[in-house]
Length: 200
Image 1 (cartoon, rainbow, N blue to C red):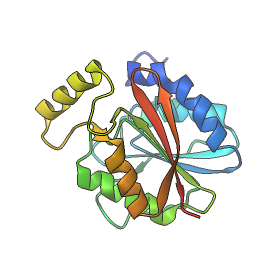
Image 2: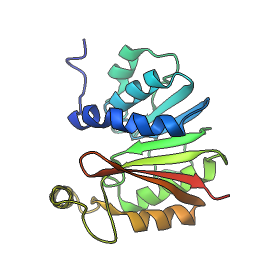
Image 3: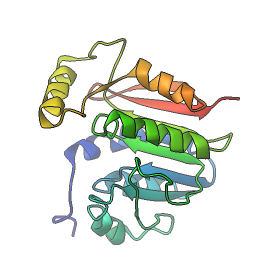
Image 4: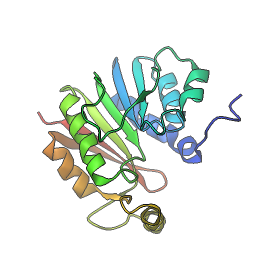
């Protein structure tokens, strides 16, 4: 039944390690906004495993249809219909959420889009909220692995605005919108899960 659905091997590989971390953050009833739902594999896996959470998928208007078949097939009561969200277009659709989650988007977006994503999420997160950002990140200007260096070259060859972001830059951006890095988890395949929470 799932043979013809859009599929990402990376999503399949990383969904369990990510869920292990997210389950400790999204630990009470609330709504998660997922920015960049893609194939929908994460949305379905996480919504199924976290029935107390209302999962709100979103994606760029040009990509929003990609996840629809998988979300429809899953037919989970806590999995909401996907909404079109261009992070750079303000105002965002009126969204009320407890947490935000995004995977493998920061290196695809232009930096001004990353800035807008943080700004809009920072404005909306409640005091007990969090923004979980997954993907490859550099540290103090250095690549964490040779594979990440090659991936960065591949990205920049595809489009000049793409590239692996540096943790220091992302932390400074978060701070400017009222968010602090509370957790920094090493993940498989030289990725990280960064958890940002509102300043108290």
